[in-house]
Image 1 (cartoon, rainbow, N blue to C red):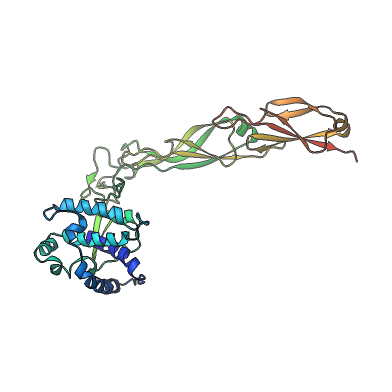
Image 2 (image 1 turned 120 degrees about the horizontal axis):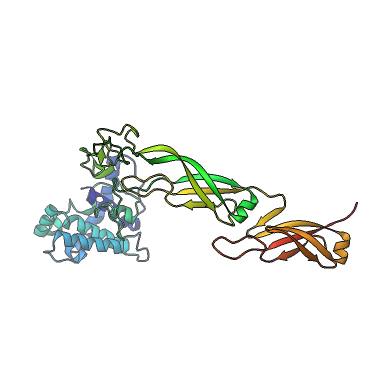
Length: 384
C-alpha cells in the first residue's frame, strides 16, 4: 500500500503540473486527501471515452506475469519521469498514464476486476482517486528507491544499518617554522583517540560471551513503522541499528568496543608544504565498526612567518639593501638563499626596487622535482 501511495503521489504531481497550477498542500491528512481527489476525479471522467487499454499503455500482453508488468512499468517510469525527461513535453502525461496502469495491473484484485469489466470496474479504485501526497516534491530516485528493494536506478542500493562502517577521521594541527615547511621535517604527534578494546577485541561483549541477534528487528537493524498509507523505515531503537545486542558488556570498554588511549604517530612532513594544507595519513584515525576500515588522520599545516623570506607559491622573495654607489656603478652583493649565502652581480644603473631572479633557488613543488625561483628585491638605501 505504501508503494502505491508513493506512485500515486508522483503521478499526481507529474500530470497536474501541466493541467493546472498546483494547489498548496495543507499539513492535515484529510485536507491533503480532498485537495488531490476532486480535480483528478473530474479529469479522469472527462478523459474516459479515450482512455487507453492499460495493457497497451504498459506494452504487455494480457497474460503477462506481475513481475513482467512491474519491470515494464519500471522501464517506462524511468523513461518518462519529468525529472529525467524534461525535453519531452508529453513525458509527464505518459508517466501519469503508465502509473495509473500500474496501479491497476500491479494489484491482483484490481486487475481481476479490470479484466472482467474494463475501466468501468476500477473507476473508483484507479490511479488518482486515492489519497496520499506525502512525497510531493521528491525527486525520481528518492521515489523509486522505495519501490524496488531500496535500489535506485544505476544499481545504487540503500545501505543496511548493520553493514561495516568506516571509522571517524581525526584532525590535528601542527605549527612549522618557515624552513621546516620549505625543507620538510619529521614530527611525532601525541594524540588521544579511540582504539579497539584489547579485552573484547572490539566486540563490546564480555570475554567468553557473544553479541546476540536483536529480537526486536531480528538482526536487520531497522524497524518499519506504518503511518497511514506510508511505511517509514527507522533504525531499531533497541539495538540502535546494530542488528545485535550485548547482554553482558565488556568491563573495560563498557560495551563500546573501543577505549581512549594515547598514542604517538610519526608524521613525515614533505618538502614544500604551505600554510593551510592538510596532510592525510590513511587509516590512522578512529577504528571502524563491524569490521569496517579505520578512518584517516588529517594534519593541518600552519607556517610561521620568516623575518627575511616571503613566499609566493614556489617562489621566495627577499629584500636586499644596496648603496647608491652599487646601484649606479654596479657590483656584487651577498644574498641569503634557502641553501645559504651566495654572491649576486648588480648591473650598472639599477633602479630602486629592481627585482632580479635566481632560477632554481626557490621552493620545491609538491609531488614534482621542479623548483621555483628566488626573487631578489634590490632596495637602494639613500643616505640621510
